[in-house]
Amino acid sequence: MGTALVTGATSGIGLELAWQLAAARHHLVLVARDAARLDDVARQVRAAAGVDVEVLPADVGDPAGRAAVADRLRQPTRPVGLLVNNAGFSPGQLFVGGDLAVEENALEVMVRAVLELSHAAAPAMVRRGRGAILNVSSMSAFTAMGTYAAAKSWVLVFTEALAAELAGTGVTATALCPGLVRTEFHRRAGLDASTWPAVGWTDVEQVAAEALAGVRRGRVVVIPSARYRAAALVLRHAPRPLVRSLLGPRTSGRALRRRR
Image (cartoon, rainbow, N blue to C red; front, side, top):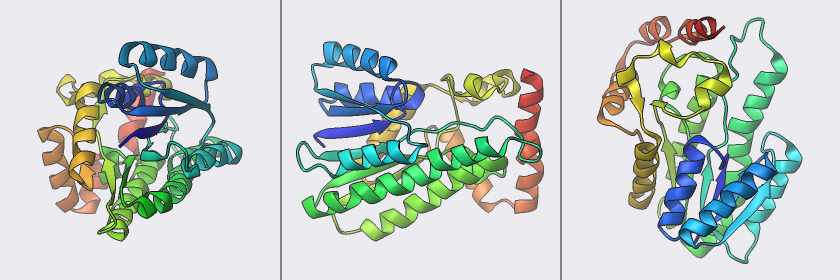
């Protein structure tokens, strides 16, 4: 694919994707808010993998940050062959009584950024007749666990629609739907990771590897690990009242209370 652009590239799934792409000899454009951390990651990747790494400090939750990333995606020199919309976070609160500004920022990062950056990347890819967009959704997209689940559900359906629109162009769209992954995600959200059983966790290396394998195969939805694929099948066919009862906002609320 030549050059891959990864948002949220300094931690978690985004960082692991960057490392695996570099190991496969892809050049990188790394996007995140923390310029110092970006530079540190870029130095390590260049030294270990010997690939070119651009850094683009930008907050995709901010219109100016999204515009900067979109401009890079449109550049004809060293075109981006793989866009990874990975940046995201859990609001870490229940909606009722929560901070509305946090919810609005979550939508900017996990919905509007995916929309705008995909819109910037796809036309150039279609003109070249090749390329891929990987949007990080979540297993929560199949649940009713609050506004994070709602945002990730949008990412999943958007990606499915985009994949259908791109059919026959040589460009693909893939939604990654991981379950519980061993990263700093839950700590940053103020969630108590011990709420979930140990068997539910997946290593980030496996998640990234299955995601990239899915992109190479042109798969539309990638759900890492057999147990989560089985769970997704059940959730897709389960009565929604049952899903809301078992995997609604109260489920994440228990993790918040445990943490606090």
